[in-house]
Image (cartoon, rainbow, N blue to C red; front, side):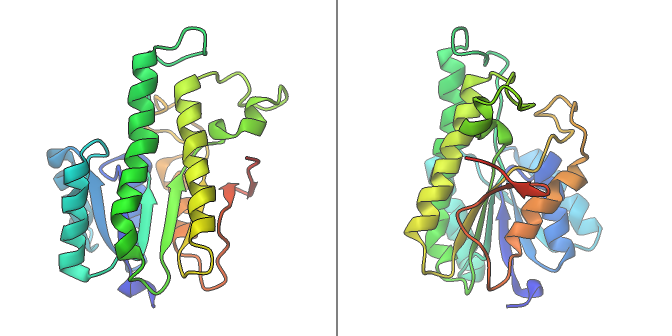
Length: 243
């Protein structure tokens, strides 16, 4: 299929990396559903991209609302009958997160329920639609903070970032990538974890060294991988990331 025929869903698409991923995919001709839990912000983001001549639509997707996720899948099915690209971008942090000795268990539960369980729920709901695609692509927007190897490497720049809940949620997301890629091996669907880098967004307190536009490039690249696409990988700009 040509890029102009592709149908994509990006979660957490009303701002930051998600909005830029949506913009770049739509700029390449894909129709993009902007998944977001906040209707006002989601519709404003969709209006911004539509005004720029891009084909997008807001779609209510709250990672903690199982029934709402099912409704979103039904909406896509009714309109297109398939989904070619799923980018699991939505995720949260919590100021009560921290080292294992002091992080709030309530914050850990909230982060894991959204970043991992919510993403799992979205992926399961969208899989039947991805199986109707000629070449389904699932991109899990992960983080190098989710690397067990780097968390245990004192020479790594990520070593001192002890956020037990957030890091664990991304490690769990990587497990989803590995297991789902193996489950779907031999099918046209490929699954990869992509760490976009340290990006200036609300989630990072705008402390990153990359713009959202720059951070969106790698997820978009993996969303548009061709027939010889790799699967079950964990990558960051310029290199693979150790699990």
